Amino acid sequence: MLILICFGAFQFWVSQVVRSYFMDQQIQQIRTQAERIAVEAAPYLSQHNAEGLYSYLKSEANSLGAALLVVNPSGTVLMDAYSQYNGRRLPYLETQAVLSGQQSFAWGMHTLTASTNKTEASGTGLVSMLQRWLTAGSRGEETVVYGAATIMADNAIAGAVVLSISIQSLMDQIENISLQMSLVSLLVAAVAMLFNILVSGALIKPLRSLTESIRLIGQGDFSHRVKVRGRSEMAEMAATFNAVTEKLENLDQSRGEFVSNASHELKTPLASMKILVETMLHEENLDPAMAHEFLGDINSEIDRMSQLISELLALVKQDEADAIYTQEVHISSLAMEVTLKLGKLASEKGIVLETDIARNLYVLGDRMMLEQMITNLVDNAIKYTQEKGHVMVSVHRADTQVQLVVQDNGIGIAQEDITKIFDRFYRVDKARSRHTGGTGLGLSIVKGIVQAHGGSIQVKSQLGEGTSMEVLLPMAPVPSEEAPAQPQESEDLV
Ligand SMILES: Nc1ncnc2c1ncn2[C@@H]1O[C@H](COP(=O)(O)OP(=O)(O)OP(=O)(O)O)[C@@H](O)[C@H]1O
Ligand SMILES: [Mg+2]
Image (cartoon, rainbow, N blue to C red; front, side, top):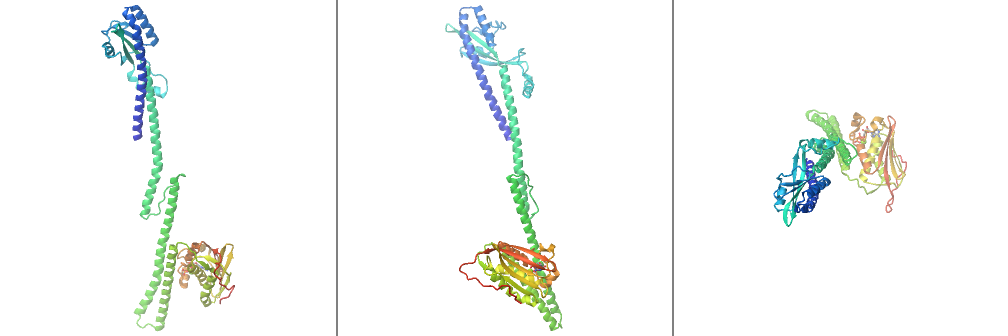
């Protein structure tokens, strides 16, 4: 709207400037001619040469294409080049102004009606049609300018020359120009408005949608997405926003799952402990052997709970870690230490636990975390291998990496479960895992630790044949000041 008003005002101002410029030019020309004729007509008047004055006026009127009169000092027409007004009084102010001696030249604009030589707008173009329509009310009228100049003879006012020139064609031209300018202004304003609507629409609409999505996210609704259109910066922003929202949604989902799984896992041992304790409380003549067994069960539930809590803490610690590990960890000796620690567990099941560990391999990292990672892998291998099975822990250099493999010939993992075993709380066989005391957090902790160390983990498994977990970690150079430990190679620990 503001654009329209501005364009309207500008167009009006320009048309006024154009009009006054052309009018000034025209009046100046009329003045020059009228004053010249007044000087040239003066001798005819003082000599009372009516014939000479008539032929002079006639030739001037013809050459100028104008009406030309000479009036006497009282305003009566002495001589009309076209002999129409002879003897009539001219009532025009401009004639009176010059005859009274106030001005040597005066002019006025008049509209003559029922003109026979009226020039009308012609042509078939849109502008001409509009012009004809707009000027329809003024048809039959003609705008003329009267210019009057004093004729001086013997230092007295002998009369005045009145020159009347039609400026209708000039007026038509000015009108035409104004109309064209109005149309152009209107067109420019319309284009500007359209552009404004399109640009503001293109900018504001996605911004509104983005604001709405941010508001919804603020209320905890992560399912909302912004529409991505085109390839503009706005579209890029919308795509980034959607990606962030998706991550938030996933995080929110896994946080919810984690909390419900964790509380479920904590409730289960508590519930079984409560049953055991209640039985012991209410059973008056409880057999001491039975009571001992119950206490043993309670003890293992406590162990289970404490393992779960320490695993949960490990996960939290892992989430909070800023992944800056600068400690040089002698992975060869660490793998050996862990294997030795778990040797007893393996021997209880009659499992042969072997190692094939290359000397002097280092990685940059957190020793405690790496120890937990190897422990979880070896613990799984022992846990999910039947009695008298085999577990092999090997550490080797693989190009610029250290390769740690924990291989067993245990129960194996079905293909459809392989991608899920790293999810928090996922256990393939829940009943069996419950029996073996697992919580389903071990491998997710392993994966987190490996990733935090810039490494990767891969599983190869065949159901009923065994599993191989391969971890690759970036190798660190051997520290110069440290004498490397000497791990044993291919040692049978059982
Ligand atoms: N070596 C393996 N052989 C067969 N199945 C395995 C092996 N390692 C892991 N799994 C399967 O993957 C599941 C997830 O392992 P994970 O270590 O995360 O949990 P868990 O051993 O059940 O419990 P915990 O949190 O005590 O380690 C296990 O429940 C088991 O079903
Ligand atoms: Mg485990």
